[in-house]
Image (cartoon, rainbow, N blue to C red; front, side, top):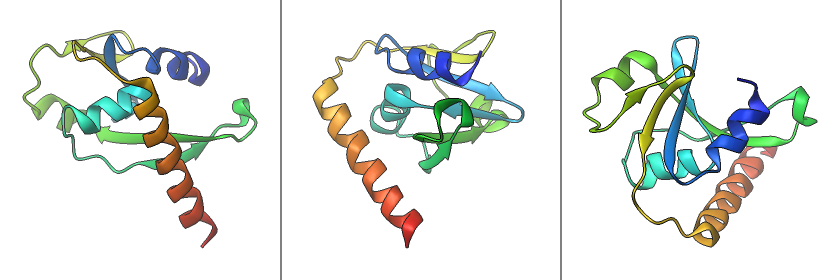
Length: 113
């Protein structure tokens, strides 16, 4: 699955998507937001840039795949791309967008400092 597909899928609110990349699982978009806000996972958000996306800054967080397996997350399903967790909570996309923009602004500021 390429980064464009991951970002598109990560904007969905029906599941939290964890993408396996080597020894890590990566989170993006709404999935990243829900992992922090609902699951309270110990994640550090960072910016990653992809050539395929014209070096646009993308919020991302990673967790060791082994650490993922040690978490007690009910309903977590292994998939072809990593893991998926059904989300039954409602998501206010305006609140998510404000959170996203605030995180991005802070990280871009830190990047320039």
